Image 1 (cartoon, chains in turn purple, brown):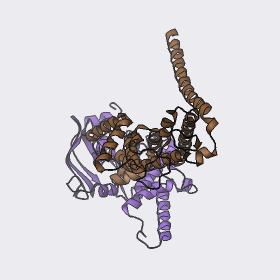
Image 2: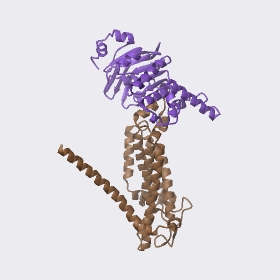
Image 3: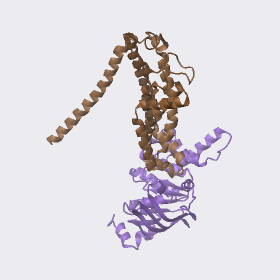
Image 4: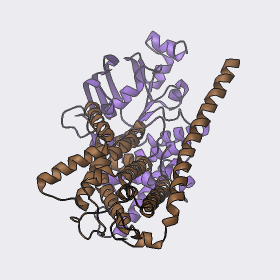
Length: 260
Length: 282
């Protein structure tokens, strides 16, 4: 079943065209790895899927993207609703300038996701939010490390912990899709492995789209591979087929490390 | 190799010389003011209003000017904070767009560079048109106008230093512009915002020309916003202009008290800024 459909998508920054006529169907509840040499448009493609691209200056987008059949570039689309459904995990995990607890609670609060919202009892509401924060910190594999200092500044965490906090923050808004932009590139090997493990668990419930420049990571994690080269979509297919019998000459060269 | 070393020595010497000059200037000013003003500093000076007029009177104190200055600058700081903070936040590209924001910055920079006597003259003209006389209210409004460009531009620089990636994090989980601004930008820029308040406060409490015509001067402590009000800068100005040496000494005492207030407010602000910066992301 397809979750996202990209139809003749082209993106330019000013006069520089970054993506050319991309057509792509992204399957539900799998890990989709977007790979390709640096500067080929991986991150741009990723950020077009929840319209984070809109934040850039002089960017122009042509074509359509459908999430669950709904055109996200249609006029009147509420981007805050879209970004709640399609969450984003950044390359460098900037924590928000607040406590660990607040970092996770921020999303549910703005989207009104805590169950007892509107309850007359303020105490019950607080308790409910605590349960929520604990749940998502556990889901991101961070709870045991931070449970005794939830109200310490998030900026004090190590970078590996910050990335898992970012993961908890994304999960806390109950998205259906998680976009991850080279989520392990800033991490040490152990933290990177923790994040990868978490991804394997999460794909049961989420569609994960992962940009990576590490071919081995794409092999380890990817169920479906999308290969971009210089702004063109070269090849996209299930991982097994992609790695064993690539159809395109460029794909073969990239897998063999001849181009990078 | 040798020229590189010479370069290093030269610039180090230049830096040390400049630093020395800065410290000498400060200690020089403090030393002269203390030497001339400490002799007249006593409890009566701080607690009493002048006896026999501020121009010739040697008795009583300058409580009218101390309280007056605090009234003026407190009112003006609160008002300009209420206006400057929204201005600084609106200068983000999400709100005004780069072009209009840059025009606004230019306007603020020109206002910043406008001499305070021009603000005073402008305020005076407006007050004459409205039939108002020199008063605490007039002084507060003109000081507010004087302080807004400084405060808004300093805050604007602090807001601009918030990394875009940090804002992107809030947008990425579906926050809208105002949620991102309040929860992320404001928190991250808080120390810089404090600095903006302090810069503007310093200019406001020390300025004489803008309040000369608009706030007036009096020996009394004002009891309403429409009363004229004394101030420390004008106490320095008027008292140092008299032929009586004892009154001239009182001018230096007023300057000493002014410096002390600036010092205390700076220390408090720094402590507060430090306290509020614990969540900052570096």
